[in-house]
Each structure stands twice: as C-alpha cells, then as structure tokens.
Image (tube, rainbow over all chains, first blue to last red; front, side, top):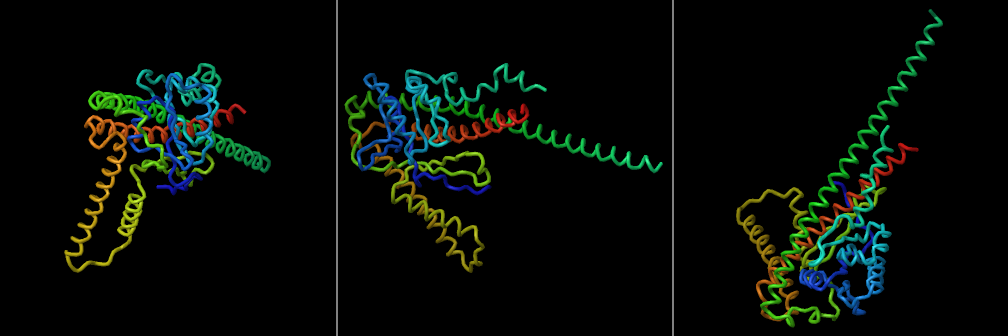
Length: 130
Length: 222
C-alpha cells in the first residue's frame, strides 16, 4: 500500500453539521459534537426560525476552519445557500449533502454531481468524438 | 543501388516515428479509458452509498422518534445538550496518498469514540501490532504465548469497555435511564457516520478521476 502523508489539519479533525434538529441530535449521540473553549459548537441546528444569513455565516465559518474535515449539510438547507455551496470547490473540508426526514435526497441538486454531469451532456459527447 | 540505401533508411526512420506516435496515442487512449472507468465506478459507488445512507438515517430517525415517544419530548431535546467545553469523541484523520502529490485526493479515516484514555489504548495497540511484524525470538514455552494472548484479549475487552463508557456518556445528557430505542438510534447514526466517511472518500476519488478525464479532454482538443 502506498504511503500516506497527513494533510495539514489538526490530528483530530472534526465533522461539522448544518442540519435539522433530529439529524444533529442523532450525530451528536454518535459523538461528533465539539464545544471549544469559546463555547463555539461544530454544528448549527436549522429550524423554521433560522435565517438564510445565519446558515451562510455558519457555512462560511465551517469552510474556513482548519480543524474541520467534513461538513454535513441537509440538502434542503444547501438549497437555501445553493450559490455558496456550488461555488465551493476545495477538497477539504468535504461538503456532503445528506437527506433529511422531510426532504429525501435528490441527485439533481447535489453540487458534486452537478459539477461532473457535464460529462454526460450531448454537446460534450459530440465534441469528444474524433 | 547506392542511392536507394539512404532513401530506404529515411523511410525506415519515418516508419519508426509513425509507429512510436501510434503507440503513444494508444497508451493515451488506454489511460483515458482507465480514467473514465474509474470515474464511472466511483460515481456508481457514490450513488449506492448515498442510497444506503438514506436507509440508515431513516432507521435512525424512526428510532429517535420512538425514543421521544417513550421518554417524552422534553427528555429527548437539543435544549439538554451540553454547552460546556468538551472535545468530540468521534473525529477524523485526514491523509493524502504520497504518490498522488499532484492531485489533491484526501483520504478520510473515522476514529470512533477516541477519548483521551482510549487514544492511548489505540496507540499502544498499534505499537504491539508493529512489534508482531518484526521477527520474534523463538519461544521456549507455551506459557509465554498464553500470557501474550491473554494480555491481547484483555486489551481488546478493555477497549470495548471504554467504547461502551463513551457511548453511555454521550447518552447521559438525556438522563441516566434511557430507552433502548435511543441506544438503537445511537447505533444507527454511528453506522451512518461510517457510511458518510466512505462517501467522502468516494467523492474525492470521483472528483480526482473527473479532473483527469477533463484534463485529458482539454489536451486532446488543444
């Protein structure tokens, strides 16, 4: 097996969450919850009162922190800040869109699949032919 | 006759060049096909894992709803969450394949229930695994072997106990006695976490393969 070098994040990188209450509660029970010395958490619970600005701020904060390796975001929440999510293209932290209780996963909206779907477009197939 | 020799030599040289170019082209096509295959495989795996994740999460939400029903809404609530300083028990290790320095393909490894005490256990276990790989002196008696086996089993059971303690600690915010459905929900979300890490790795493989295909397409057009 090839050697692996550690990418510059802290030794224990975190999983951040921007999701509904049940999803966040479930993953907190699985031990991913982190509260730092400034009482800042690695999650944002989104409900009917959460503003789009708050979601955007949380997303920007989590994507700029060195100690976060994966961000879980409910797809319906990602749709609220779709422009931000689609314009993000760094490998770490990885943005994973997950389903929620009331909103099943839709591959058509997944930002990763949107990025690669052009390979299947008719124009690209025709232009690739010799 | 003498004039034909240099002409023949030129023709041979040109043929050799054409052959080399054809071989190069073939090698590029083979590489391109391999990249496309890798991309398609990783895309398929990604979608399959997402489907599996959806099913695991559904089970987790159902168990959580059942726990809320049996324990009461006020007992299974995010209001009870601990906002004092505490590090995450479950975290990630992010590495990169040293051979693939050009392409940023990170690899994620899940470290479940690694409290400060547990970490030392995990490191100690790694060290003993490394020792096993090195040649060992021949043992004279079976008792030493038995002692080592027992010690290894003790370490494993100690680790299991540690993990159970961490699980109980995580649920303790909801009270001392919790519904079995809450424990089931915890296990479902742990499984979901493992699937998510696989999805993250598949995602980075897919994007890496996509970049290669995209780059080769650009080179062939240019």
